[in-house]
Length: 440
Image 1 (cartoon, rainbow, N blue to C red):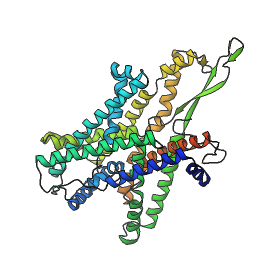
Image 2 (cartoon, rainbow, N blue to C red; image 1 turned 30 degrees about the vertical axis):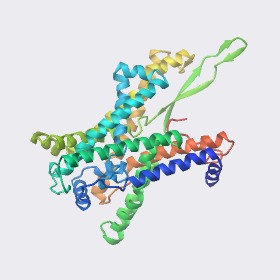
Image 3 (cartoon, rainbow, N blue to C red; image 1 turned 60 degrees about the vertical axis):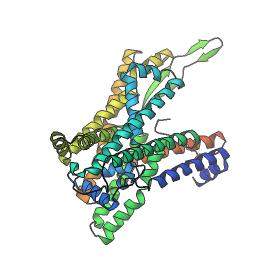
Image 4 (cartoon, one colour; image 1 turned 120 degrees about the vertical axis):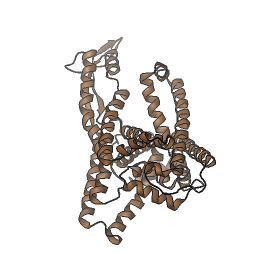
């Protein structure tokens, strides 16, 4: 691996891309320490501590922003509005014929969809930042009476909305620049950087709990480490696991050449939806809280108080993850279109009739392999809450962040390896090619 890194530095184009990516991530990290004006930082820390004591997964949301939400900095929203807008646009390409036609128009249609995604990011960022400003001015809507704002009023609301929305737009632009001029997928790398930046504070917290505060004993620590190792191993396995459906292509003679006749396979990933169902579920569960801060009605507050109970919240959370896993997998993979493409190019699954029977076989196989992936996503999403509740350890690096870190690391390493192999260099592992999350 050290030799592969040295080879990567020797390639001018790859070196420029790596340095550009590092520079953008450094600028983004600097912006995560710029607090918006008018906030009492000490009171804000107590406020978030109270939220965590109530069992809300605020630490999970804060983890995606690299701690920016807890400190209420310029990038407090991070790229979450962009992710939500992207998911909504992908769902609209299935439901709305206009967006479906745009998706079929090639690069021109994709550019328009990206433009609509940017508009949606600005709209969602403005709505979420406005909800945050109302919550900061009225923390009592969440049952916590801690004054957070020095001078509340219309000016603070507008300033918070403009600042946080601008931070979201800037984070989105950073991600697009990394994708275009850097190495790796930009939005994913920004989330990756935010998660990795929290590892030192998490290790320091465990150290204090073990040696200074003595709220954690050695047996609990060993159980926690064993659990984290199991989560990492399981995440890597689920991320790379695929179900290979064998495909045989018929032999065709065109002129003096013979085409087809080879045996290949269709790789169906066990976790085809990635971490999208978790993000979409947490966004949906945040909507009642945002609505309660914008519309101070007793019925909405009672609904939020009911949902916030751990015995209610986490089962709903897990059910939403399982539902969105199936839903997003169905959006991403179209068995009917796959069967049609196989028949068009003379391919067939041995023992299965082409056409509708092939589509039904692929759909049935996909439903079966999606079930363990969906339950795995639900398990790792609620795992930090159980670890914190029964082991007394504040988890900064639970199952969901591991899933993101593993996936982004594999994709980025695969891109670097592609640059190395194009110039006759060896990859990261001698004699072995990395396989990314897409089963290639």
